Amino acid sequence: MPVVKTGETEYEQELSKWEKPYRYEPFPKMVYRGVLKGNGKHDFESRTVQSDREWTAAKAEGWCDGPDEAVGLVERQEADIANAAAENAYKAKRMSSKAQKELAAIEAATHRHVAE
Image (cartoon, rainbow, N blue to C red; front, side, top):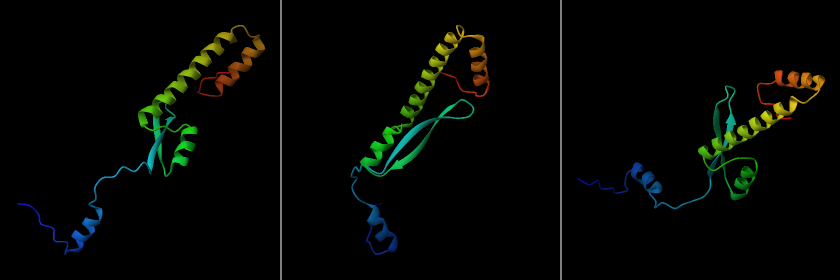
C-alpha cells in the first residue's frame, strides 16, 4: 500500500525540504594526500575544499582527487628516494674514509633513506 504524504505533520514538512532532484555541485569536495606512517606503511589523510581556488592550491601542495591516487603518489616518491639512496650508496664506495664515516653517522641518525 502506498504512503500518502499530506504535508500536515512537522515530520512531512521537514522531509519535503530535503526531497529535491539531484543536482551536481562540484564543491565542497574531498581531496586526499598520501602519508608515510611511522611503521613504514602508506596511508592517506583527507580534507575538504570549498572552491576551485582552494582546490587548485591543494593540488599544488600535493593533494589528490582520490585516496588511491594519493597513496600511489607517496609510493612513487618513496621509490624515487630509495633509488637516489641506492645511487648514493654506490657513489659512497668511492669516497674517502672520512666522508664515508660522515655518511654513516648521518644514516645512523634516521630510519629514512639518505639520498644526498
